[in-house]
Length: 384
Image 1 (cartoon, rainbow, N blue to C red):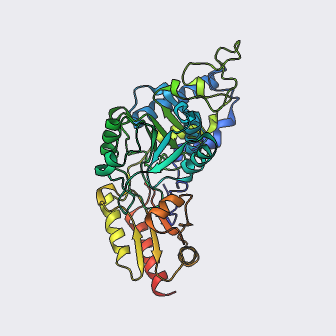
Image 2 (tube, rainbow, N blue to C red):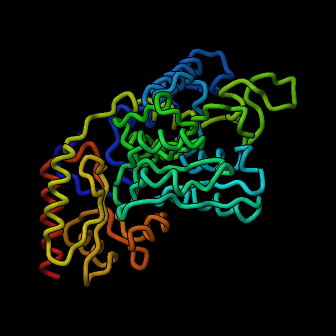
Image 3 (cartoon, one colour):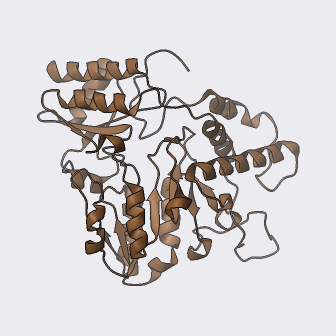
């Protein structure tokens, strides 16, 4: 990768840079004639089909699921979450309750709000600590009851980077008999999920963030396909003589021609995921430095061991938009300001009035890049 300083700190939106292997695929994919994945028998298309199935196997290892065919590809995690929430049969029963973490993204909240308005269901927020961590000690006493059809857990917050203690949460939810949907959108590709061991029923993920792939790629995992009605229907090259939706996996949930270019590029990204150049300890030390800067509040996990490579900042006098503009125009540092499509998380933290400046790292960031960020922050705060 280029050795120049990396001033891009908005990887929670879309990661940068991308692996060179992925970029080569994007540049040369259409140098040869390509048919449709799983349909055509020519050498080029067969090669692409095999590459997509290789991706499915790699993602199965990342999710730690034995049924790779239960991993469905789509354009992003938002589609996957919609497909699960809108297709999950128990949520069609009036009176059903969805139990959610306090840090859910609008990719969950908007479809869920629409379902609540039209289906006679409701949602409740799980008990939690000030940083949004689910309070497992209080889950049993605040369980909404047997009508709880699903629990939604955002594994890593896109606002403060807090990673939920999913093992203890899953154990308690299993004891209560509640199926589990995990949103893995912000997790790095190097952070395994262990869905089989933890008994997680659904996982949604995206390709363009921690997996370092192109936009327009993602997917979701369904443990029990019979519990979900497909969101879309159409041709998939299987049992074409029938007008009924096929039952075979993954074809049942993958109607139409998929984003072959994006999936093959994602396969290269997943195959070449680097380790993070900045350790979690170095990152948390940098957050401590930020917290000591005058007037600055750092929104992060209360537990250093569960701090992802995302944090948020607010200042006692500067608006987030002002801080972000100064970082960009004075130092070329790219961050994101606002509510980050997660108003519920901001309400939980108490930052919903103004939003925050969000900083998020890439595996390719170095300690020199981090020092550049810290220097820029100090300058902006002291010389405004």
